[in-house]
Amino acid sequence: MEGKVVIVTGASSGIGLATARCFGAKGSKVVMAARSLDRLQELAATVADPEHVLCVQCDVTREEDCRNLVAQTIARWGRIDVLVNNAGISMRAMFKDLDLKVLHSLMDVNFWGTVNCSKAALPYLLESKGSLVGVISIAGYSALPARTGYSASKYAVRGFLDTIRIEHLKDGLNVLVFAPGYTASNVRNAALTANGSPQGETPLDEGKLMSAEACAEKLYKAVLHRRSQVTLTALGRLTVLFHRLFPRLTDRMTYRFIAREAGSPFK
Image (cartoon, rainbow, N blue to C red; front, side):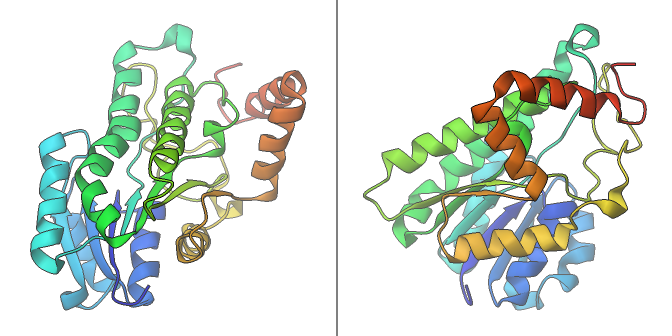
């Protein structure tokens, strides 16, 4: 991947930042995108040398921001080899208690953000025969209760990218659906509650989860080897398998797992 041009959305923290650093360490030219330009500029030196990193303010829910992200990348380096659609938000609340604006927010960022960026970058990815990547979740294969908007958006991203892969099967485009399991990040602290306010804390022991750096390394290798699907962690792979083979049993097991969380909405 040395010399390749890689765009990473949601690059100011978590998996996105770790991914930007991973590609930067491998010699790629990295475009970091997020809503906070100041935060990106603070972190840029940890990603790559100044001539190999570009910071672009981008709200992925805005089509014009996504077009600008691509335009700035092309103006700087003239090509795009990899787009990592990582920007995303989560939620934690029962649907019966939920303000529907929360679902709209989840779909706008997670699904439409992926669509907006992919639409803008696709002509250049086709030209380079590059890789279009969507970071989803195990919740995009097997539903996660109290995360209706999150699961729905990740299912939607998977369906969208699987379709793009088939449409361009003969064009040399690689499309990767990348599904981490539980990974240490800020996503649960920032998860929206029933009224749309940030949760502010995580129900999990983040120290026991896969690190964002380990996740990013696996994403890098998946892009390098032009994989089409990757599901991380033993628990994640088992969940996907059980959901396919024993869906009712998986429903009950998932219910019990979430019911044990600190502050579970089931209690």
